[in-house]
Image (cartoon, rainbow, N blue to C red):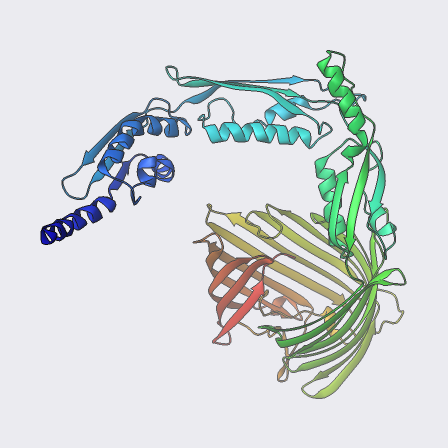
Amino acid sequence: MKGLVLGGIALLLPLLAAAQDWHYQVRIKAPGALESLLEDNLDLVRYRTNARMDRDQLQRMLRSAPEQVKTLVATAGYYSPEVNIHLDESETPTVTVDVVPGEPVLVGEVEITLEGFASTSDTAFDQAALKAGWTLPTGSVFRQDDWEKAKRDILRALVQTRYPRAQMTASEAVVDPDTRRALLHITLDSGPEMRFGELKIEGLRRYPESVVRNLNPIKPGDYYSEAALQAYQGKLQDTGYFSNVEVSADLSSVVGEQIDAAQNKAAGEPQPMAMAPLPLLVRVVENKRKNASVGIGFSTNTGARTSLTYDDLNVFGLKMKSALTWETKRQAARSDFYFPTTPDGYNDSFGAQLERKDIEGEITRTASVAAKRAWGTPLLERSVSLEYLNESKTVNRVVSSHSQSLPLTWASTWRKVDNLVFPTKGYVINATFGGALLPVLTDEKFIRATSRGITYLPLNAKSTVILRAELGALASVHQEGVPTTYLFRAGGDNSVRGYAYQELGVQQGDATVGGRYLATASAEYQYWFKPAWGAAVFYDAGNAANSLGGLHPKSGYGVGARYKSPVGPINVDVAYGHAVRRVRLHFSLGFTF
């Protein structure tokens, strides 16, 4: 008897195991976007490998699946689909879900009702612009996600303006499957308009209030604006004085008025058009005053690098930044002092530098002091600088000259790109003009001008053409006496690839020295096969010379890899220099300037 029982158990174990491991497959036949939607959300797909699944549970899901499919495809705008579901148990159980979505439901009439929007000034809120920004217009496919996003977007656009207490008091979407049209209606209540009041600062300990006040573009009485708050916060974060910055309107100051307004509204009484001004509140956490760091690195232009930096954010009320840099081809010591930004938006600074460079047989030793005023925005930056430079130069191991100069230079940069860090469309242009025209601390008078430009031309979502060019010219009676810094050479990572750093210029014995004129150009095609990874092919050409007729271009071409790092696009290129018949590796960070 015992043997019979054991034998029966032995026969049942495989059956129990099979029952516990009853899996099936699902095949979905639907247009691409709907197929992904069903695969991600359909219960038949979600539970196909569940350990507790059996045939009875599958049959129950098959009965409810058509309604679930219709509900899911309705969110994508299809309200009259044909759904056929079939189970094939011949081998591995397979469920086939066949969906013919039919014609999508389109947005018909869109009605946006605006209530309130009374103003205490002659400047009325642009209600037409608010309505024009609606993102689900007549004729578009009505999708549930798009409907919800459009409502969020229009409310967000409103609360970021003078009406931060605005609310959406009603929203309705009426879908007619027969006509395949969706009639949309929303109601927005503006609430009272609000303005900014006086500035309040919290968290300052070591640094003067002028660091915060001078950057404030918001005046008491200005309409509330989320964009103005964010712009002010960004300016304060960029100063380097603070590890954390929060700029906001102090809404707590009008809590009492808000409660009274709510009670009056409930009682049917008239609502106030405006509330008391909102104090502009700036909360900061200061960076530590002093900071030192050590770094090592490598540049395909100037070789191995070791650096030591030391910053002090309060030296007699000024911000000091200093650095010692030791590279294979360049060594430098520099210190700069920055004044707090003025109320008019000017950034003034002065500094000094000692530098030694050994480039292509030319060794220069330079001492300089400079003063600079800069102003503008990231879209249009301008500056004026005055620099005194004292230089000695050795060419082919022979001390050949000593010069000094006191040039005044104007510079401007225009940016019109879709993204300042990862541009894919637009252009950047930089131009400088200046010179040393007075016989004061100047051995040779000169005028110098440069222009650089880069443009991004998107071909499609994954590929872009990048065109780059640089021109430079210097005019003087004699070239001797003009410091090497103001002459031109080409070659290197962001110049003509395939050549060493500043390898192209005027030949003087075995050395290469700077010339009066410069012209370079580049064409590059980039393809991004993944969001962060791409490849490129490029062609560069250019040269520097002492005459326009001597500007015989040297070409370089090759391939490269691209990576979108947190600090900008990293470029690794392998280039062939046609004139020198050599392959060279180049590494750089972005193209923008």
